[in-house]
Image 1: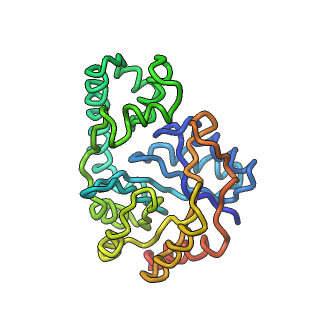
Image 2: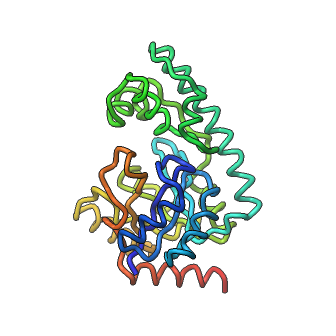
Length: 275
């Protein structure tokens, strides 16, 4: 049962609709996917409907963007009750923060003599969760940069002059939110965050897994995080972090998937939360 547990639609910063993603997953040989849009759950229903038609299991998920001193940490949630009141209320706050963030980024870009209309960014996002990739697309469209890499390196990376931090959701709060919605919290692409020292603290707060199989990870990184997962009795997950065919990322659905036994353990963990 090949599964990809990290996929984004055009409800966040992907380029394809939830239904299109399910069909692409089917064509790529996947039998299960998790839709894990950034800070928004609005695409899950459409993905589930297409999943029923296409015979692809759709796991309701989310990727929450959080900040800890010195690191941006993304927390994935799997098997969430995406209609849970506490989750939807917090997501409304986060989405409002994302909109305000775009205005601040645009203001910084204007100070750098780069003119971008915030309404164009919102139009490109097409949802309630605009982010830096949408700003990057606006920059490319305006001719200010040639590609995503240049947009982030010159302007949008956390070390760059137009960077604006996120709404201040802590990793611990994100974990609590996911657990409260009946989900399983997992540390997304931990090597990117470079915050291994925080893993014990996150485990103490309810972290259940690590995303270990991820595009670009070296065998050494995989071995390291498998050792960490064993040390703290954490679930092992993985996914492509697919953002679409025109997203600037060179990966297709079906290129990366996790073994059946990892999905079995994840389902068993979910069953235990219901017992």
